[in-house]
Length: 264
Image (cartoon, rainbow, N blue to C red; front, side, top):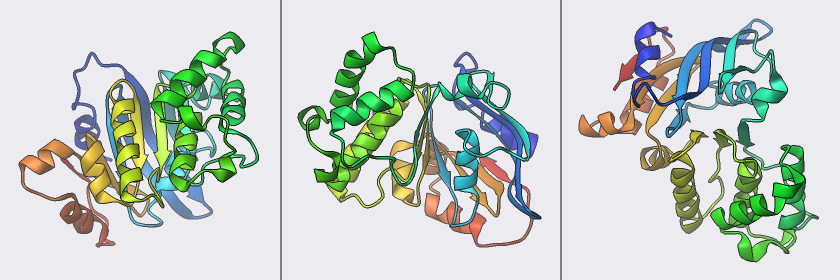
């Protein structure tokens, strides 16, 4: 990615706002195939970043690297200033992650599962009750704490998945398709929650729903064939009268090598 794009990605908030994520020259190869090529960007507290791309663009590979579930072939990832490769345990303590398929135990109650998640995330025992009270209230799960996860609707299960990702109050939250399979009302509730989380934290949202990115994200980055081909501000796009769909089609239909572009 060019320096112009990298700098554009850093200037949407004042310089005094701390960066929770810094990615530099990230590569990942599977054999001779590059699933991620020269990916660089930063994310600051108070930002919600939409990560877009067609199937096979490299979104899942990048999120797996950012969460420490896949080692990069080259590059640097820093979470709240901590190098993910050098100090993985410390760096991961700042991350909350919801994969596309939430890691739920259907035979547990919501309360039992979140207590387990809190323990795995290193929440102190004396703070667990308060952490569960806060996260179940934030995710509208207070009335479902004693119910088996397997008995809950898809929307409520998705809320439980988000709750486990934020029970330890992480600075960086990574959400992979958090509204997949939800009805319009459930989608609206989850979008509201994402906006609330993004007010004081950093959020990366990966989704195929372009309207969702326009509704909740501050910035968008589009991947194509493992490369970052577009980085821009949602507000700038709206001011310029350009739809996200137009941008997405323009930068993902061609298979030609091109320099990435930035807007705002």
